[in-house]
Length: 303
Image (cartoon, rainbow, N blue to C red; front, side, top):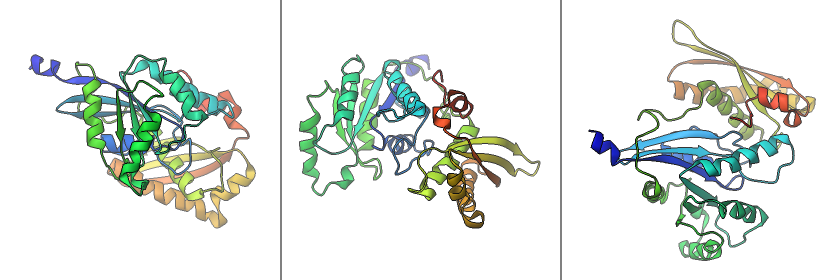
């Protein structure tokens, strides 16, 4: 039995890239379960989310990081720090890019970071489902191939699940042999409260569309199971302005009700139990530039 374990592979893989290239969508698909929230807005992921994929080949521990971008406030600086700090801690790096021949300043900055690392870097050209002609992908590979010494270049569609099995195969190819870090039924190290808070934030981002910028945090104040199995959850949406509070609540509480209903359905599916979700809205001006408030909302540089 011991010998069989030694033949398995186990290691840490980080997904990096500019905001909104599909890192969370890809990770959710690769592990087969939704853990990271996704939204059409950039910079959705704020913390480093650790998820686990285990099969007969071994175990991959994914670190989904915030997008690397030019920071505009302390929250932005924190997000970039988390993303760049991860590079030295992993066995394989996945760099996600969009299908384009234009390599902008953001990509150049990431390439500079990657040229300093010793770990194998796999370039993942995502969103190939948006191409009219699949042969176009060859021009994107040509544009990127010399920017870094890539171990592999893989075109995928995280959304349509195209070529993702090939990507998993290649990740295992570069992982070291070793024992798994987690039990085989572990999917994430995220506390349930944090996942619930993130799901509420995702629904708020989706339903509010362009009306509210990214200045929303969510805290879960209460999570208690009744004797009959119903889970009572109380959560607060924190925004930066009084005008934002009005938009989040909506006319007669309609928007807050929509956010709550959408989040409750997904939380019930995840917990496999009935959920009673109550949402509140609080204003904390300029919280994204306040280190104490950022820590209170779970954004810590040491985490």
